[in-house]
Length: 468
Image 1: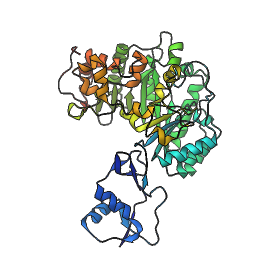
Image 2: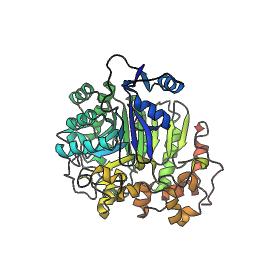
Image 3: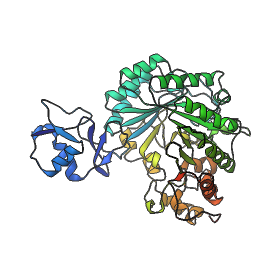
Image 4: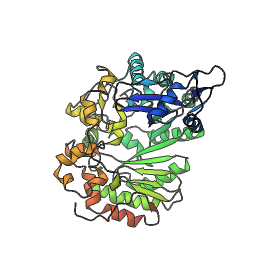
């Protein structure tokens, strides 16, 4: 009997990852045993297969089915060997142009507006390269991505090549019914990540009168069209007192998740913040107050408090983000950041960075790990300064930083967030000061006490103290 791959399965291999597959709609590839992979490669709808236990197992797991008539593999499904390291996702800034003038933009090296943008011809070439490198999913960002004249052409081009758009970051201004209709017609239904910086405070941070009203309109429109919505809220001293009411409003609008971000020390924010930036202990204290109050509201919306907490009110549970690993999960070969190891951040001028949160800082310092308009993506993901940086392992942090080397909590935080380490200390391999504050000043214990009614899924082996 002839068997063929299920239409949701595509076979891939990369350097150091010889046997893997994508399942449509999931951004990350998963591994296979050699014999499983070889069997799946032979299930092309053309060859006869002898029945055996492995064939039955793979059919039962949904990887293959008996061929019905003249079924053929799609181009996306066909086995592709990628001569580069595995990177399943791209965070793509298709334009630096923006209709707002945000005070904090971490993509900016200063207060000057960015005019960089991808031409359609450049974008199509990049998408061809991304496909050949085994990229699967995109986050589309800006600037304001919907300001790009070829916004829909770029989205369509991603899908035409068998990849998909997982997320769109937008301020919501250009979201209209017609845009959503075009996306639905093309089968494009990403997570819409809309900025909203607090009731009564959004206009100030975004530098545009009416921005708050436009964001709420966009959220309502997306939910009315069944697009999932996540809001991203920068928290600072001016909007702290409105945070709980903002969360309640977002929950009432059907928002799936809220991400609260301590507005960090990117170059533009340092120029504009004045006394608005929260200190680290102030951030932890006020966010812990918020978390305790929010979990009692009856809201169902999940909340991520950047570099601190994940709140799941429906299940009555939470996790502490500084506890990145359980002690038994730690190993020296882990990447310094799991996020950047799986996602390439590409700027509007073609420069690539470990993450967009660092792009403004890197631009200001002239530290450019590579440029996809000048070099092939395959080269950058095979042998480059960029690859060396994102593949740096956590043992290099411990070797470099004496504080990390002697810290009993290192196997939990692995040195912390590289973005915070760089913007707060200027040292790529230095300790993230926010994690030193978290563990050294007892915020693990404070959090357990404040949220004692709820399940903590990030327990550590012993209670922290001040010895760090």
